[in-house]
Length: 328
Image (cartoon, rainbow, N blue to C red; front, top):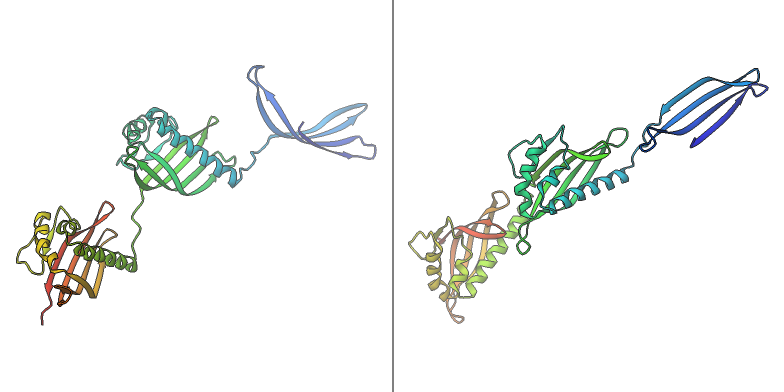
């Protein structure tokens, strides 16, 4: 007995209710299993002997797991999974997944994986990327009366690549962990690359103005190569202000600026419009005035511009630039 209460009945105390909790040890001596249960006995005196007239025994319902405890469990299990990646042994990673009912939708595979063999095969390549995950936002929802299943979802960032060249990848995750024979196993895992955060019109305008300043500042260096390096080395379309050519490569772009930078150009935007195309491309168009010539004899030239800037990795590059003298 681990907890009890006794209530007497009858004028002579010849009946009582004995209730509470008890733990039974069951099984062979070297393999005992504790079972927690609840009891209610009614004992009555018959002659000089006490007899049980009622006995109710039931397995004790599991104690509900608190949100704090379940979150701690989820974080510990994620650490186990993340630590298994560091071993670079796909078998150890796959061992954390359920070998019966499994649904696995990986980050970089089109397959819906439903067994541990294919899970192991997926991780053969993935562990070679030296992945290390860090949770940046999370939610834990418990299921089942005993807290023997939970959904762990949220955002994580993976660092991938060699030690001296790590690349962060932001992703989203959903794990369902279930207790199977005393062990936590993953029965569902869905991981996906985080969609890009939409850029507001105000943010994109700031980016456009910053990039124009970079381009204008490059002109001040009088280094044609520095200016040309702001243009994409791939699919380029450049229609300069004072050249009849349609320039499509960096070599000719640099050649154009060899002469142009000697005019001491400084541009000031007088009217502009920015149109975003997703978060990694925008068109910046409008009118600018260039001051050209030596310090004592500057000449203003009003012109029109269209820039298409695209993001290449973490860098903004000019994919299209059309500049023309403003008509009278």
